[in-house]
Length: 528
Image 1: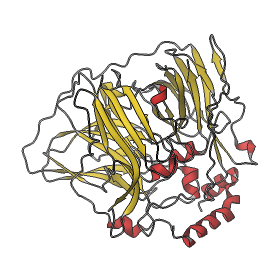
Image 2: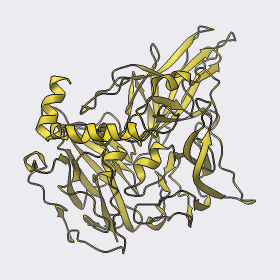
Image 3: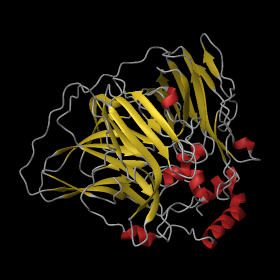
Image 4: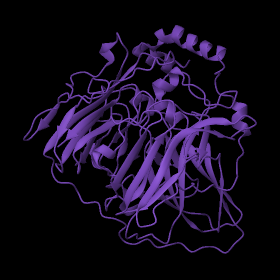
């Protein structure tokens, strides 16, 4: 163990976990669930032609989108000869729903799993009762009908995934997720279709099945050994030299951060979670954290017959405990190959891609603190932050209410006794942390008072980061304005977010490292 890890684990009380950790690992080996096998990882082929995301079939004969969605165990041939049991929608890996602004969407979901689930439409602006939050479960062998209209201004690359509390980590680990692309009615880049890239990861045991969670998974967020693009390992995409490629990516991993770069090629960022930026931003690399999406343009080399790698560079998010083998390695996500063909001319972007108006001065100011704690080590928890604290101009604070549902506590010996908290509390179903009003501009100062990075996600709206605090404590405006629903906070970092909720109801906000959310770093606001 590195000295840094020893000191950090000691501070959190995690070294006292040694008997528990050893017991749980030994228990797993005795019961046929050993750790991941690197041989299986090597057997998965590379450099196959990039697979298109398979569509969820639209059953509507008219305008709009109507579909049936089944969540079920599906046997998939990944590494052979044993088929891997994954949990998929409609028996498809990384499926795609494709709609246009203004469409009416009607989706009947059937739960064929052995545990409750939901479908959360991440980034899609829907009524609160259609959001698929943890308070709206679909029980095993039951159905749920989701129906909503795609609002104008909601164009962009979104995704859908389950959101049941106490079951989410296992469902994401088994690949239950899909992409949700909303086309704008008027698209300035309609002729540049590009590629949709859904990034996921898997960890398999020696039998080729999804390996169980480890204590490090629960502490840090699970990272699989197989890093996949559209369910493929390092696929190949051929294009003419000089081609301008449009790459739209989703980080659908539970805990893995993606630090994207293409050596000797600039990245032009043209869109984020909430759609187009106003103008393209040129970057050398881009950090895409769990839950985030990006829309990139890349002009390939004019040299024919070249191989060019889209890389995931190492990113240290302050890992606790034994690091995964890949953690400090550079990984290749995708390989571009320039053909022996005529050179394509560079494209010219329009002067303005989208409109991102500055939000008005806030009527409400809230403080949100992310923290971690070991039982018996309260001195390492968040201090001085009362739950639900807000400075509000006109109405009161949050309070509890009942949903008639109870949290089901899963007994899992691999879970360390660490608490991930928002404003000093772990998530309690039915508890409301804040009260808000429809269309009222709010400013949230979010403080990461913990030892590791956390991607912060808000349901029901998109927000703008209006200020970020540097290491010296100085506030500064971000380099460009963007609509986001997920943003990263480094340890001890503060951000100011400005947002407004257009729909009434209960909306969740949480860390989008799936295991941290599952272990308590989640709360809700009720908007009326």
